[in-house]
Length: 106
Image 1: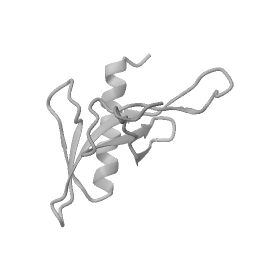
Image 2: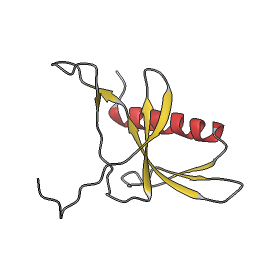
Image 3: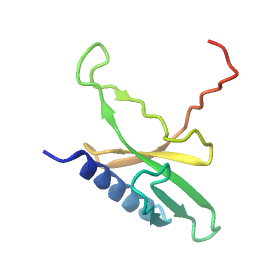
């Protein structure tokens, strides 16, 4: 059985490889509990992307069995992108973030 911390490290390492394959320079954060896991820099434009890495989890039972469970960012900030890592397929994707609007009423 893999320890939860090790799963997070594995996901970050897969994300680093994927970003490097996309042509980015990638830097890992040195804090263990940070809202930013990786910093990716486009070498041509020097555009910086702040990334929060999340593992894809799927529901194990119920009507929605097998569907992906949504994960929220640690900090609600439009400058931090979520990069999801699917350990089953070893694929990565940057997802559109949803933000909670405290002024909006249900």
